[in-house]
Amino acid sequence: MSDTEAIDTIRAAAVLARYPRRDPGDLVNILHDLQAEFRYLPEEALRETASHLGLAPTQVYGVATFYHGFHTAPRGEHTCTVCVGTACHVRGAARLLEQVERDTGIGAGGTTPDLSLSVEEVGCVGACALGPLVLMDGEYHGDMTPERLSRLMKKALAAEEGS
Ligand code: FES
Image (cartoon, rainbow, N blue to C red):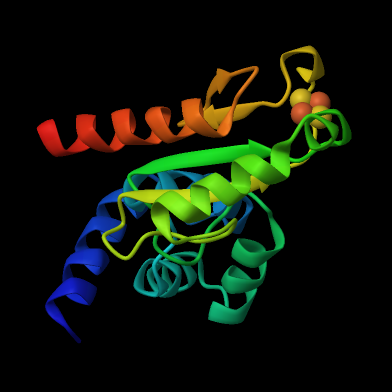
C-alpha cells in the first residue's frame, strides 16, 4: 500500500467511525460524507466502506458509479460548471466551453493535472433568464461571455494560489 493509500484509509476510517451501526442503509450517506472529505471517492475509501458495512466491494462501487453526483476520479479544488440546457445553448454555451478549453486545456468532464479546476456540463438549472449561465463552485454567474469567464476562472485560481 502506498503512503497516499494508507492516508486515504485513515481518513476514510474517521468518516466511517461516524456510522457505528454498520447499517448498509447508510451507504449513500457515507458516500456523501466521504466525498465531502476527499472531493471524490478514492478506491481505498470504497474498499473500507464495503468492509465496514459487510458488503461486497462491487456493491459499493455500483452505488458510487450509479449516482451522477458521486465522483470516482480526483476532482479539482474549484469546479466550473457550464449550463448546456437549451436556453443557454442557444445563447452561446458552446463558446464558453471552447474558452474554458483554450484557457485550461481541459474540456467538460476534465480536471487539470494540478487538481486546481474541474469542468462540468449540466442540463438546465432553472435560471434560463440569466443564460448563458456558469456556476463557479456552485455560485451562479449569468449573462456570461467568454472574456468574463476567462476572468472568473483566473480569479478563482488566483485566490487558490494566494491562500
Ligand atoms: S438552460 Fe441554462 S439555466 Fe436553463
